[in-house]
Length: 474
Image (tube, rainbow, N blue to C red; front, side, top):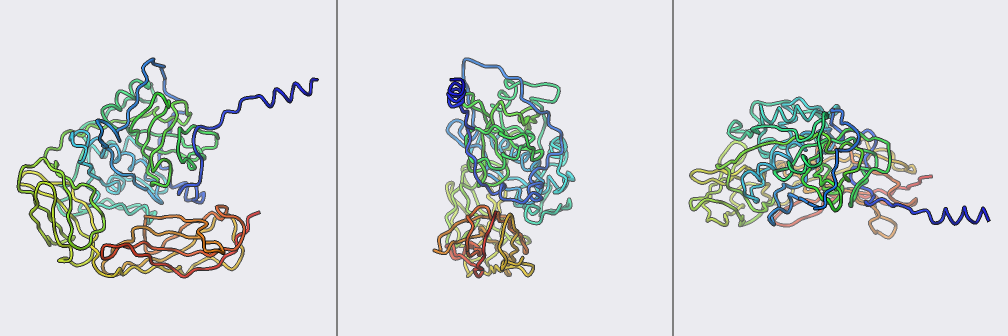
């Protein structure tokens, strides 16, 4: 009878399943050494949670949908560098810049590279949020077109430059003030939520190992094993979900297309330390492209948003020369990209009193010069593979220097079906792309790399030769 009671009791113990989806992501597939480069917050974040107070009125806030508009810039990827503090700081800057302008379409993008370089951040060591905030106030940063992000591909620190681009002084933005809704000396969810209603916040967290595998839902750590100190932007909250909404810097393959919900009760310390930036109205920047494509070809019609009433023009220029100026109407600019050689350009909208934040585009009207191949130091693929391996690949972009849209590692089975595929959008001439062989079952496969290139208005795929491999994991 006693045994029956014990079994009955055990069977009827409620099981509380995690409320979030776990799965492989672009960062969970990284090696332990590469994972370390994701966590670049040097500040010690207090463990535990904010002081919470239950309210009869449940509120929610999401800057991706305030007044029916999205005020947040696209997700970025910090790549192989511990620059999360710079990315989270720039995410807050970009969001606040748009919000303060009162123009949801004014989604200017700024440079984490200059901020990281000139604030003396380190890919291997990381950075401090206070220093990032101070650097944004004292030195500022430029637009992304002026100082593109390179450290994610190279894994190396950049040197602070006096001239990342032409007219750097005119293209530098600084924040006006910094406040701290929550600090290590105290804070509450009410203060943080009230601050969030005015704009995004920079915060830190002690990320656990399972955070790398987050695919959706409300995250709450299921392990005590720490992965490292991390920085993210909080862009909202939901009292029904009892969670903070974060914008991460690990690309769109992580979380809910790069975003995530973290439970109020998670012990990572998220929200315990927060920084808020005031940018102020930028009346001279009330021009913007609407959904500008990075790759252009043929005769183009670029949609624009503006508060101007007349005399909008488009300037397209290379690094050193103004090459083309086009008069526009108040809704679109039409120009023929075939009038320019293939390559990298900077585009900007201007009126008599306003200028847009410049953006980088690539014009590609000829056959792509991209070449992709296995590297000389390739590991021995004739032996059975197990665990995590690194595969080397070389990339050549020719005279035009037009990068591919993405490079993918593809693993196919004996039937030719894709068993595994990973995407990488950080590029260098010599790359190492990791592959966890546990992602597929033991057996025989073929592996190759595919480069997705843009040319003549279409996407074309360039592939390495396929190599047969055997995978065996005990």
